[in-house]
Length: 375
Figure 1 (tube, rainbow, N blue to C red):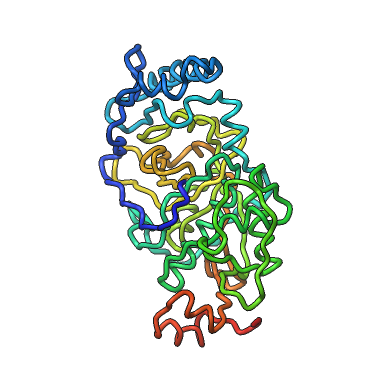
Figure 2: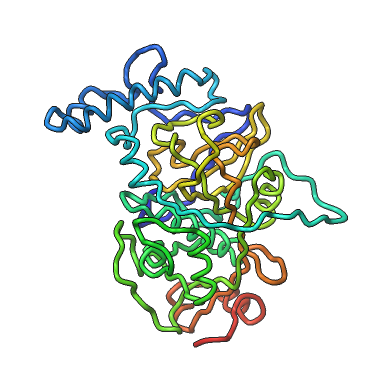
């Protein structure tokens, strides 16, 4: 997802009917021949994959064959995914995987449901974007840092849910500094959370540690510096327990998950329900909501490949059957009291001015979020 200088709230996607909106100006490539789906695509092909680069032309031809095969499984009502030419069509699948699918596996315990005497029924439709607690779609570019985007996105939303302030936090800080990860060459969401929890490192604002799309030297900040730190986390394997995932999503906030995203290279829109292997998880994303109002219920998933990919940077994935393996590795931040994504913010006096927080928030720190442990 695009890492933009100015963060805006994501536009809400129309719901209902079990269908997904089609990106404006883009048409899927037909299964029985037909033309590419971008207006002026012949000129685009000459400009981007011109005759000087035979490899990219070959990759484009392979993409067109693959897209036609995928679209042969799609219906005409947008209840299934549709595929076409996009920013990744000039890449062979093996290069696409090597660059963009760099989430590394991490063994986590199986989730065990905790029975409660009384539970509130789940809504048929829920999206944390409606609450203005999800930052804008970012773009990892050619950096294999999806794992860092997923974790930071979850913490940003947790921050907003906790104190009603949507802040842009630094992904580059996690890429450069996280232990047991490989920066833009791959990493694990669980390893990143473990590093944040053990070190109590405070994530600074994106404007103070901007994204460079490459691994750099870690920039350390003074303990008194403004930032966000977590108190604890828990990671679970939710295989076959997507109802429990929905409960956690509603009660806790957006969920950082790992998925099998091999077939996402050509995705334009619709609901992904047939084209994932549910095999090896290789990409980290953020689930912001779900929609069960139509014939095909689906998850609303924020990606990190820019807003021009998919549905304004999002994908819709069918709920049930563990499509794309999205419930295999589910990271949910919990403190010892069971409060989801419990986060304490260690903020100095200068920090309050830096963030331009309201007076009421300054008062709130004394009994709610400010933990006077370090200065």
